[in-house]
Image (cartoon, rainbow, N blue to C red; front, side):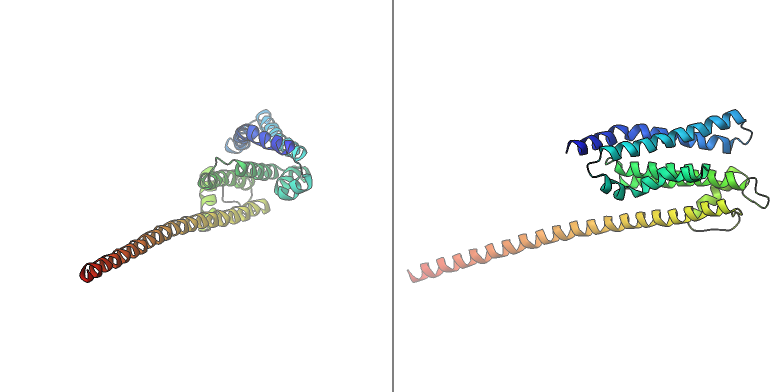
Length: 245
């Protein structure tokens, strides 16, 4: 029980610092892409920041694993975290660091009880739109047959891809760019499903409240009807008694 409490305390104390580091990661990831003229020193610093942030999330996973009472159950329950920690070690690409950090941030954000589903979905949409734009721009800008050359083109493409509209005026031509496109499409469909499910749940909750109120009113009316019948019976009995007397 103490180990479980220690894990909960650790997650509560590290929630905000890790989210702040995620913002730092976003800045470090975006700077070399947005500023195409960035020098080697600046790019190296940004790359180091990305690795450091990923390393902190990896350490956070190991600490939570060590504090967990049921470590096997923790690994089974947080298998996505484990994949996100191991992923960049297999092939140290910037895109994999981006994917793993997004997964780790998303998993930790879901742990925060104060974050409502609406806030989480809105943050996921903004984050995926931003990182999807940067990711596709980084791999498509220098492609020989690429048509996504500016940040505006990338944002427009990400928006149409996430909403599964797909006008076709901009499209990735590289393998990595198409992988980003697949991820954005699947994420857009998943987020749309979450939004739809929450709207349906809200309507169901409202209908259930209306049904409860309607049943309460019906029961009150039935009780009042029984009282009226009992009063009529008493009045009729008194009338017969007075007539007989």
